[in-house]
Length: 352
Image (cartoon, rainbow, N blue to C red; front, side, top):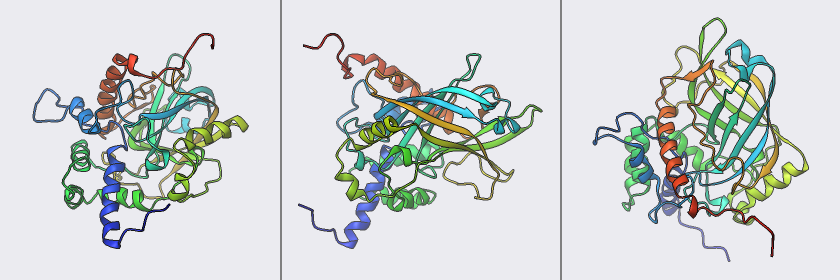
């Protein structure tokens, strides 16, 4: 039986609280990496504590984006990216890809329709032992402009003070764009229809040694069909896993990788600021997802999608978040691998 509709006043407050919950689970480890030897500054451990729910982390799982499913496929590079980067992964060719669709929550049992942020971790392996790892989410901008600000946001979202999120939003007006997306942005019924964004700036270096500040996105080639959240709730707690498994079984799913090149005046250290839509954008290739596999004992289970693992020709920019995420991802990885006995594995051996 449906619950009665809240009053407008309660709806406004509810939206703010909802955004807080969304953000608390949105981006795993966008945390501060430098300065962990100074007790008054943030550390990976402090960030993981802020990300943990009141009941504590789910042992054996990623400390955020804990619910997910693996995929394998290929990245088909069309060679156009070679104009701005000498990275071998952008030379024309086909390279193995391994990834993970995921939800921005520390709860591996969360209902899919309750989580606003969806993500994709991706590893592409061009020849010669090189790797390109990236972690993207479906939001168009990030929720905080600095790692310190993100930590403040997590604390506000987890606070028992009902005004904490309002206080944070007033002190951090840059949060408004993400907040508007969280409230009003479209939902889809499939990972295959989601637009995944690498919100941080990186530097591509071309064959002449010239540098280009860029951000990248994966644009779905599947038809995007917006679905109301209320309708998604009727599909069950695990509809995303079930849907993408069936869809890929019926045929490979594709995303176009679009690389946007910044103008010299564009901000590169602040992921809350989108670049103007008229910036040069290059279609550098296609991600083809060919197979879905369960996460437990699957090929992505033990992959750390560290965004600072980059091939020659790609490097980090002045954006502090990739290095911050790297340090927190590493801490999360250490913890969950040490807790392997607590992770639910697929039974092996003969069936009774």
